[in-house]
Amino acid sequence: MVARSSEVRPKAVRRSASPGAGGRRGRRAGRLAGLGFGGAALLILLTGCDVGAAFGGFGWPQGGITPEARRMYDLWIASCIAALAVGFLVWGLIFWCVVRYRKRGNELPVQTRYNLPMEFLYTIAPVLIVSVLFYYTAVVQTDVVKTTNNPDVTVEVVAFKWNWQFNYRDGQGTEAETVASVLGTSEVIPILVLPTDRSIRFEETSRDVIHSFWVPEMLFKRDVMPGSIRNVFEVSSLESEGAYVGRCAELCGSYHAFMNFELRVVSPENFDRFLAAKQDGASTQEALTAIGEEPYAQTTRPFETRRTESNFNPDTAPAGAGS
Ligand SMILES: [Cu+2]
Image 1 (cartoon, protein in one colour):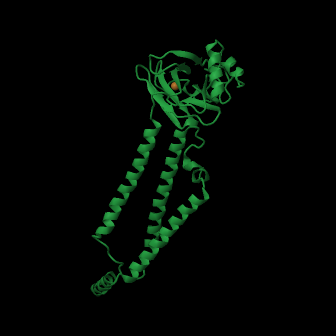
Image 2 (cartoon, protein in one colour; image 1 turned 135 degrees about the horizontal axis):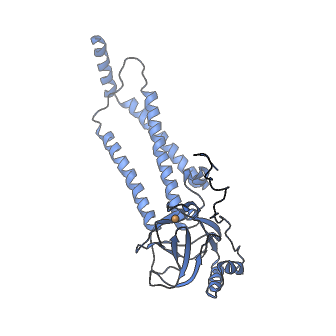
Image 3 (cartoon, helix red, strand yellow; image 1 turned 45 degrees about the vertical axis):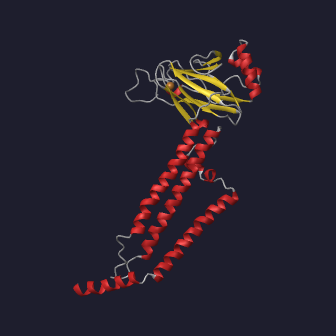
């Protein structure tokens, strides 16, 4: 045993003392990896490939209808690509080490310790990566929660157990007046009509408990608080006309799951006509019909408020039985 270990050490020392061939090989591998990543990045840029769509958005909801939603989506996709690039680099290095330094006898590989450049690299690199991700996250977040002094449309979102009221306002804050209103009932889903190409400010308030205003296509939700807290957010525009389901995203009681509404995005001209019709005393359904829109919600339907045998377990049912 003693003889063996004395055989090993000089060889290990000899190998570390002649870094020429190993260094060249390392540089070549590094160059190849760099070329590979550079080539892949160039290919993506040149082909204009939508990487997010190709990979199902990496789990992020697609089809956002606001510039803010697209920015959040882009941040997510870029973060995933960066994470994958780092992942492939690390996996590649692991596999390279596994193959390059696999056991070939009793000779020990080069024992690298106190390698300052290496330790500097693996301390600085993660800090740099996290700093870059933090920077872009802060930039996008600041942009998404930004509010302006003069939004084109201000709508007050009033949540209550278990429905919604949308008040179109002539200004901002609690001092402003409501000029038209949409109120949901157990029979009729409330439809929040809003225009494309205009900035919209949402001012939220609750009559009872905490709810949460959520339109999945806006990729954004914000809690609706009771009392004096008035949560506000803005979208710089809605980009696609259409009907989008809206939901309460905060567990607020028995019928929370049915607390739906519909966002109906129309052209600015039709929005002005809708608002004028409402101010003239038309119902929401009449005003929608007047601008050529479906009068009732297309994306969701009212829930059944009456309990029947089909939706309720009768007392005679055995414990734990489903209906
Ligand atoms: Cu709710």
